[in-house]
Length: 517
Image (cartoon, rainbow, N blue to C red; front, side, top):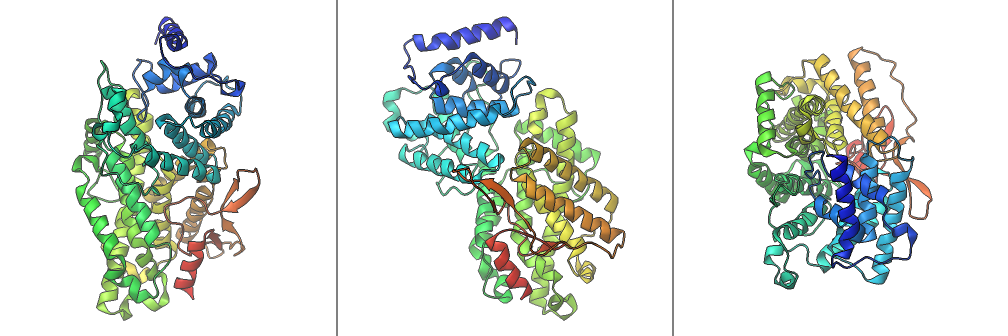
């Protein structure tokens, strides 16, 4: 975009409040917008061509009316823009400064009663920023407020079916932005807000595309909700192993699991014939699917495969216990463990091969489509795949391999793909400043890889760490104090330890007693 056009855009944004709109008044200098703020957001939310790079809000309208925006929304989006900004001249800590001011602005708007759908946008952005920066207490506080406002403002009802909005005379793009506010917030899998009353996101042409594509969003949210249900179901173990093996234990979950996996459009799922290997023909087919969807469907497929592993992993783990030698099991138990272990061994390599493909495409694809290969929150499916592969190589009774249909034969290729996943988590950890959710995941994955390397090299002197040591996340509470808490993951280690180091969490402690006492 030319400098002249950029200057015109700045002037338009500065003059917009004088064109009959309501001006956001504030006496607090922390809440006032500046040209530097506008520039940071302009670089982040508009592509060089002028098209939007935002999928959850109307970036063009946001920038045009930048100085009218509620301080909470303006500052929270400035925090994200500064976090991603490639301008090396930004002062260190700029993004964090914006985030702190955004939180203060939300609190002030709550006290003043100036709450709107834009407050929901701000709270969601603040919550996401906080979880990435290793402050989950802050994230929960603002996500809870976001959910509350969605209910209070009835943003969980589609704008087309909301007669109380008639007096606002909303344009199609304004209705679509409200719709996308809901779907963006629904990304948080712990939400219990029903999504049946909300239509799917659609593109608006006015006269050019207003938003980034969001076509796979419904399925993204449904998969994350399924993962949340799996995690909740397995938050505590059943009363006995027999109950774990019983279909009654997960009957309601099984129906949801099957319904989702059979309903996701084929065009959104990237599946290869060989779980751990992609042919050139399959890679070309994946590229065509991604281009046709024009959305980040690789990330959707990674979470789909992870949900399969998560659903079956608790039963698979029985294969590590001496009392579950396949030669001495009754046919029913043998079949259940065989099925669950097979499903895990099938899904985990799929994650590694798709992950490697996606990372490659994100680096080598044409610049205008690389965003389609963003791996959103990819540390979580990567960790799930690593847990399964490490378990099968280091913990499962090797005799089970004689009963399983899938074998891991390309150890060198697998080692390379695991390394690519760890490199991604390293980048995420650096992006989070070394204090976010990726930090304990990276520590655990790195030690798992070393443990597997020792097995391959037949190293019998593997060092054990103190059993009191835990993989945990050091966080700052709202009042500034620090403590160690369970890190975010899809489902922890279910009581296992890696070279003596445990995963911190009450659920892990209970599962440890279930399996090993």
